[in-house]
Length: 165
Image (cartoon, rainbow, N blue to C red; front, side, top):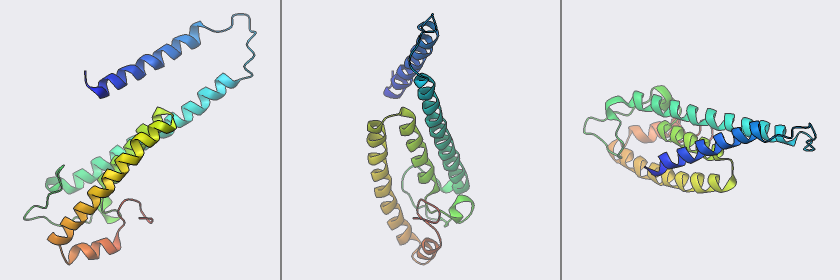
């Protein structure tokens, strides 16, 4: 079993266990004194989870769109093909690395969905640093391959965040 399969299985077991507990282990006499804190906890967790899922799915959708727009020029490696053209359509109108933006959104959603600061730090920080390093490598390769077109494109678009950076 892979680590990701094990992780998913453990989370499903935990969630199932919590649902069973909430159904089977309630105070039977109506004498609970939690003053609604259990419902508040579930509301907070539900909102955080909804945001996490929306962020992850939006990120995956952006990544898929970016990859489809690149079409035959997309590779998982930083590769400039001999007949490579600079793509400026789709999400590339605004962002130079929309598939990375999408992947980062998905990772941030995953981290938020885990519901603790340690998960956010353990996922967000290293993944972001690796993507930033990869972007520098990719931009240097594009600069060498398209010495006139790429700087002009870079001046008109943002790296990862529209209107920001």
